[in-house]
Image (tube, rainbow, N blue to C red; front, side, top):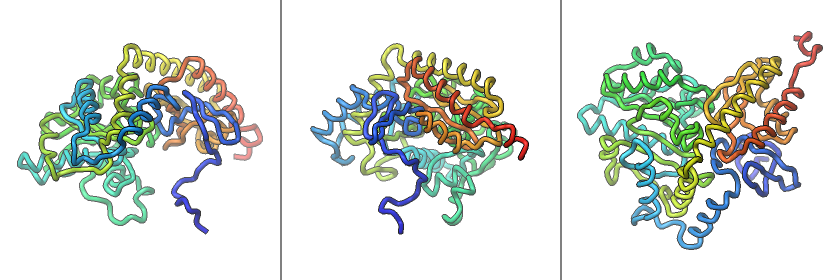
Length: 400
């Protein structure tokens, strides 16, 4: 018999009742160091005092009014994001997939309004993940995710990640823009070369295309800067954000330059819940912390410490770890072919550490941005023990 909760996930047999900072406790009292952060979402950790206080106070006043009326919390949050980014205007929604859908709509609308309605194709990249809606499944292009849902949505052309020649070859009269994650999260924690991002900006300028960045997972401080593209010294035309933007409260956003945003007029796009008082109060609380002096520098420093520790682990456990990749606090351990990442994830749970599997047999580490050096040291200790659990024995190697 099917369970009451639809079985769309293979859930681990863990149920958490409370959290504090980078730690979670199960209903039966076990404690775990959380290096998954709800898939890079609980950016300020669990039960952050400022975030929880703001949410509780706002919930006691008003949670939802709809976008038929002004929402001062959304106006404030939009102004703060504009001041801290390339954007001139912001649209708030609920999730990363919704933000990406709106971003693609904005790109298409821009070309339709500027005399080129035939331009509706987006160049996307193999290994991408942009969400689970029908259109974003097509933007993702993974056959496993598309199977059983009918023909793909038109307008998404895929090229190899990091291949500039392939990008140029794919540009045609129907091309509207280029859509890319600065670091492919689900696709194996693969960072785009900074030079490649600069070349994408240049080719968009050359051909009159829009550069659309999916910073759902990489944004909001995870790279050590507020937005990952800032490491490349470029600006997109439009960008999606979600996950860490609300610190765990459902919130997404489309950030855009005026030349794009001005065509999303009343009636062209909307949302019932997006940009409500409660979500935007949470978003403002997150910015209070992230924009405080020294916060992003601390993230960058701790991330570099974790990176060095993972390299040492890879050197110590060559039969388990093939390499380390990623950026900031979105890092991945590329595992040897004989070591399955889901099994490594389960072994880490047995040691008291939560991680997230990713594509290309990578074990992903995306801890809250508030982790300390001591917590990094503890995570490395637990990963060391996990590697010992996963080291193939001589008998296993001989059998293969």
